[in-house]
Amino acid sequence: MQQIFNFIFKNSTRLLFLLLLITSLVLTIQSHSYHRSQVVNSANIVTGSVYEQVNEVKTYFSLKEQNDKLAQENARLRKILFNKKDSTSTLEKDSVKGYDKINVIQTKVINNTYNTSENYLTINSGSLQGIKADMGVVNSQGIVGIIEKTSPRYATILSVLNIKSKINAKVKRSNHFGSLTWNAKNAGYVQLTEIPRLASVKKGDTIVTGGRSTIFPENIPIGIIDKIYTDSETNYFTLDVRLFNDMTNLNHVYVITNKESDEINKLEAETKPQQ
Amino acid sequence: MNSALILNLIRFILLLAAQIVIFNNIDLFGYINPYPYILFILLYPVNTNRARLLIASFLLGLTVDLFSNSGGVHAAACLILAYVRPSFFKFSFGLSYEYQTIKINDRLSPERFTFILISILTHHLILFLLELFKFTFILDALLRTIVTTLFTLLVSILIIYLFKPKKK
Image (cartoon, rainbow over all chains, first blue to last red; front, side, top):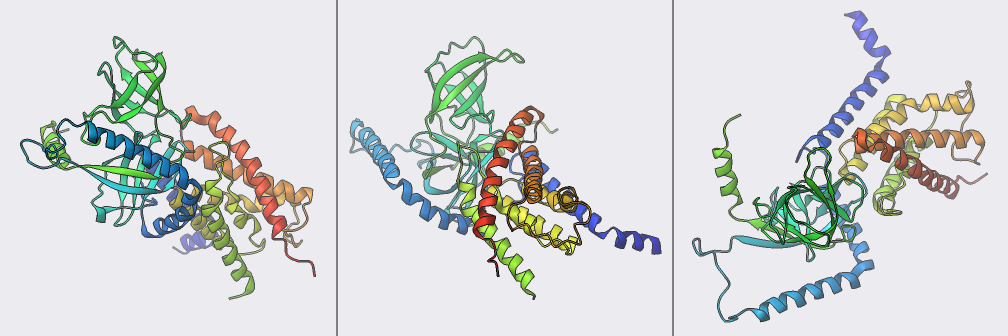
């Protein structure tokens, strides 16, 4: 017993080092391993309020650009509104349920990273505004990512520029489905994998969201095909997709909430065979 | 509360704030950020309690992790740097370093430069290996280590010169 205590006292610094090292490695491995596994994240009141202050200053440098973007979007929406066949009729309701299935929450990005292989964004709305994990995030030009963690007033987004991200997407012209991933090389391009080889795709085709999951509605623009190559391992096409979005410059984004996602997910979980 | 403790506390907070507010937003060429916050570990007094330095470095790294959503990579890198710091002192200043009064934040001598360089290199190598965390990205990690090391070195030396204590 005496010897054990002696050992601990003699090596106290080394033991402390090992203890802290193991803690930090566990945190690292946890954050790398799977979805929504981060313990240390920036969706909390301390980091959120600091980032909000920093963002207050930063947005002044891009005010003009952001205004232009919002004005452009306004113009686009106005065009849709004016082109509607009967502008006196009320909004299209879901015929069975009688309410709008999809709701959109407007929010602001207060922190954005794009220079590592696992990138996250922080926004200044959280569970109080009705944001929950696994909701889709878009902006006026295309998709941004998926909500990862929420706190009462803030939330983090798993960016499409993250090697853990996997989003269902399709080629708009031919309706072939694949999954959208990122190879951590360039912040302007993502990869669409698992497109069958008999699909006729060509450079310049538009890629949109697939609508097979409850996260994103169908036909939200993502980008255009920039390069096509055959995957040597799987014999599927892998497409380099140039994003419509400039992921390095994001400010106003929209969180998409699907009122039926809980119901669909629950039903699917019940249907799946027990493992 | 002695003055050395207060000085270190102020340094801890200021470097952390500068890292989060300024240096994490530089993004040179799209992805290079310097990490001069590790100056806290380098400038920590030489002959002091090692356990205290280890805990302080761990907390420093963990706070940076908290702000950049990176798990525990900064904490691990800072902790290892703090642990091997005495060996780096021996390597760059010779064996009898404990009896000299080493001051890192002074005129740049070859010894000081060596010490700062290998410390930054070690920290960044661990940081990027843990951050990318895949063997396919190993070349990427090495490239980033080299480029970021140069950038951090430059910024760190500038900071040391800017805040050099006045000669009496």
